[in-house]
Image (cartoon, rainbow, N blue to C red; front, side, top):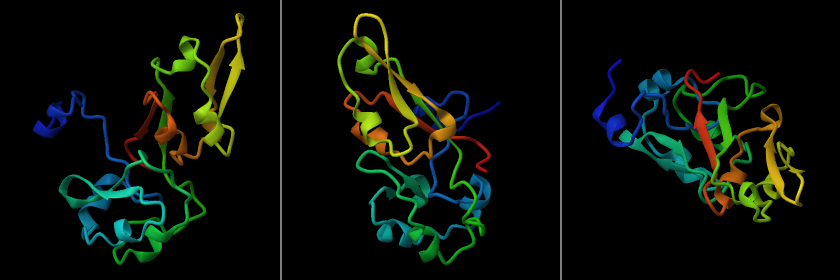
Length: 164
């Protein structure tokens, strides 16, 4: 398997990292083929989570906020890069809590769970009074609100290849 220079430089040695596109985007190949990179979705996003990424294509940046799934990006787009059926899941993301989570090391922190409306992140008490975060993937919408609030960047959100 060959990877691009860009993938090599960003540490993606197996070529698995894909930019997170706006919700309801078509697969990566179709999206990048038909997206005109006009920036309308970036300008109109009320949560300011869209930015122009590599090649000028819109991508999600959860560092400052999360997605409310308002569908503005879909509405302002003049191209055919979004799914027609908006009742489908907006995207397929893999969310994990990494080992640098301070709660896993005895510090009390539940910021991610406090931001999670669907309660996909909950804390389980263990002997000694510690609390360990547990993620229920089936409840996670991938909104990203947990990501930007984590003080140690322990939340990882990755676009799954071959988006729904």
